[in-house]
Image 1 (cartoon, helix red, strand yellow):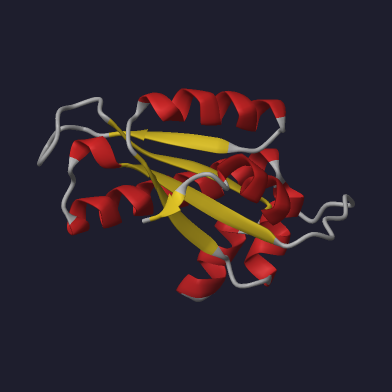
Image 2 (cartoon, helix red, strand yellow; image 1 turned 180 degrees about the vertical axis):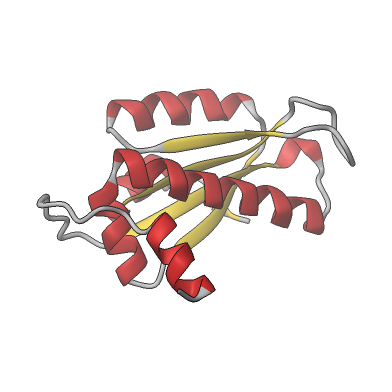
Amino acid sequence: MGLRSFLHRLTAPKPSHRSVDAPVKLVCVVNQSLKMGKGKIAAQVGHASVQAFLNAGVTHPSEVEVWLASGQKKICLKTPEAKDFDALQKEARRLDVPTHLVHDAGHTQIPAGSQTVLALGPFDETVLDELTGHLKLL
């Protein structure tokens, strides 16, 4: 078995019978108050995206199936402060949107435990747009 097949077997969601007809995307919201450099933001968004994908594979496999089959659409937005993550997470949970909040380990630019990126999804694009439509692109 090749590496690609092995990785697919590990990460592919189990087929489900629930149908998802809407476009699906993943949204990463970056905390701008930390003044992270471009490389740090890229790393934190990477952490958020991968963990959100893995978590959603367990909790929302139908959405992950659609997301994988449609090009894994992602978007990065920004918020001025970490306190905004609380309201976004609360509303996301109410709407059954999977979330993952990254807390930095503190090895480089920012203090340990800092909330850097909130990932939302993969989930219905319309729902995510309603949830994050007030935020600006990164």
